[in-house]
Length: 165
Image (tube, rainbow, N blue to C red; front, side, top):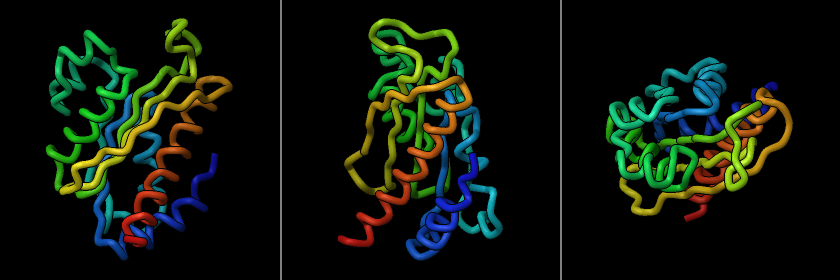
């Protein structure tokens, strides 16, 4: 999937807001970071990326609480919200996006079928984290691409709301 159209929107907005982005990704394996760095000039507004598939990496790199992982699982609102906060705390960024989900083909359950993805967005200094649960369809690649598209669109929407206020 080509994310260049979205990136042409995001890049100038990030520069305008003096925003620097960090990503914390599980099911996308760095696809969001790849999209964000796919256009020239991204060194001005991209800090780093965390790809944290295992529980251990989520705990060690992002500070996700063990209790969260064992009680709610990695594919949960609490987990992605802790991931997005941890990414901000462990970086020089002021804008973060995090995702965790079940891309498939296996791994789904009745309460969390394949295609279930949680995404969170946060701005440093803002008390509110935005997060949502999404149910994407298709094969593994389609779920990962839809997650990336939604994560990037969420960054655009968040920057638009900051501009409006």
